Amino acid sequence: MMSDLLVWVHSVLATTPQRWLELTSSLPEELLTMAPLEGEWSAAACLQHLVDTERAVFPVRVQAILEGKESFPAFNPEQEGTSSGIRSPQELAAEFARLRESALKIFDKVTPADLAKGSRHRELGAVTMSELLHEWAGHDLMHTVQAERALMQPFIRGCGAWQVYFQDHIARK
Image 1: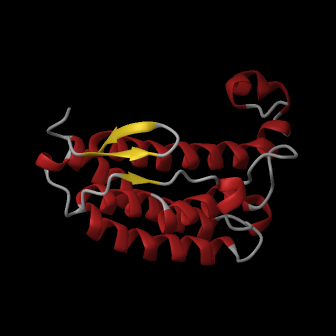
Image 2 (image 1 turned 180 degrees about the vertical axis):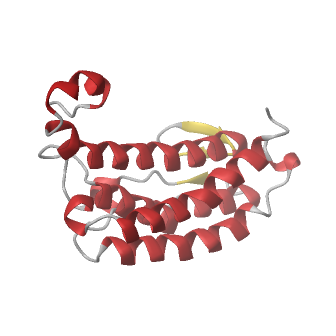
């Protein structure tokens, strides 16, 4: 897998903005901004978080490891994130696509020899470039799945007897 890691991660990172551009151009804003339950993130809030981490986390950390920096700070989305109500989902998706394009230029500097290089995450301890890239791709997919789960909720609630097929996806407190 290590030899495929750069290809796999690049594939995920290059695909995510297109998925979001499609979702936000196709779905009504009301659905995109609807939280599945009080206190949970809507699809738009998930997208805002991806924008925040694209600005302040992943490309910054990749660059830090490439430059041999000893450490980088943790990121707390509750304290350092942006309010999800600032812009429309379509604007957020366009911004995410622009940020990701720049981030991929940084990502493309990573070579297989860089995968073992590391730094120190101020909360988690020692991390390698390989681990960071796994986290970045997994983070993209996790929050896209989380967003799609949020989008599913009004449909699950309204499907009557078919709810039995959605047991693993029903938002519960």
